[in-house]
Length: 184
Image (cartoon, rainbow, N blue to C red; front, side, top):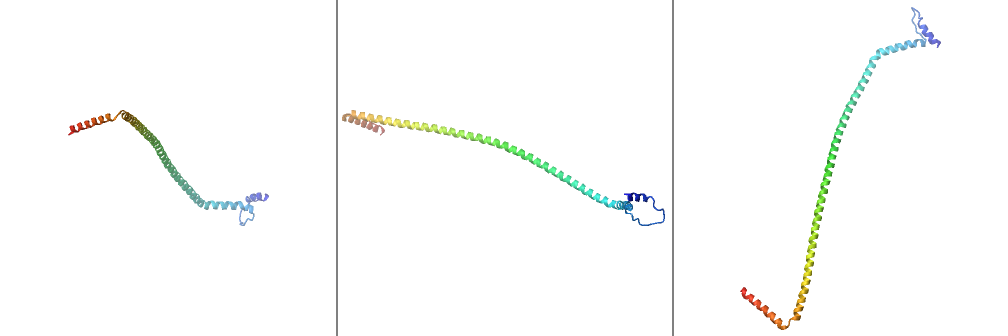
């Protein structure tokens, strides 16, 4: 450490004239060498450093501009996507409402068709019942008529003797003969 301070102190006591030589004391010459190198670097390297910094600055600004443009493009795409989403949601709501109204309309049509079918079936049932009742009444009437006819024939056969039978046939023949003369 003493050598370092001695070298700085010795800088102030340089010989005044006449001698030029190399100073071999490294600690004494280092600050001078460093200041000369730094001065040269600052003087000559300032332009190169400025160019490098300007290029870097331009690249950064270009990157920022590109990023801004990409951001604006992304925002525009997002807005278009949101607009499409709103449109699709509105269409979905419209389809949903139309679907509900269509379902309600189909439900009403189905209820009406079912009601109409039930009414037709009720009418058909009533007609069938009426037809069956008439058929049953006709069968009963035919049976009653046959039984009455058989009873009358039985009564007639038991009451008729051959003379009464001959007179009835003669009267009927006379009626038929009179009718034939009228029609001629």
